[in-house]
Length: 210
Image (cartoon, rainbow, N blue to C red):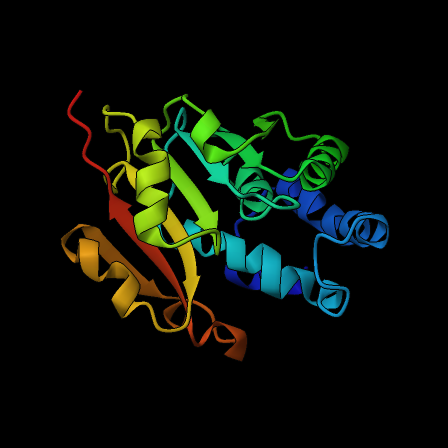
């Protein structure tokens, strides 16, 4: 928990309580359903919770915003973001039922009221959102094809509606087809730990004209 407190010192007592519960919950569920590498569960807060919260360094979702986490796995980045932004609604979606089950159980255990979940593929979701967030789900081009229909037209946040993706490594070729729509942030500008040296947040503006 110390690493979350280090970068987000203004947490409320309720947020601190919810984040503090994650280690035990994920360790327990991971022993039954492998949603995080068994070798990596000890790095939960740095590699998964803080990594998810990198999105909170580039945007503060306004109250009433709607966000879909596509390919949420066991709940990342959706669960940490839902704790950080209790006035934003998050819809967590994954095609693997057992992962959705873990995300649901964790969300319920910590008392999240702003999270809904679906066991579904992205193509099956037709609701509209301000943003779709993802972590290492698919290429940005494929992601754009999948979720363009889900991006609403009404703007209410500092960033234009669209995709916010957590990415790692070299991504120049990936963003090349949509470079004019992309903004990229290096996570090493926000976090000191070596784990984040090659990690990025990419925002892709999605302009729907329906």
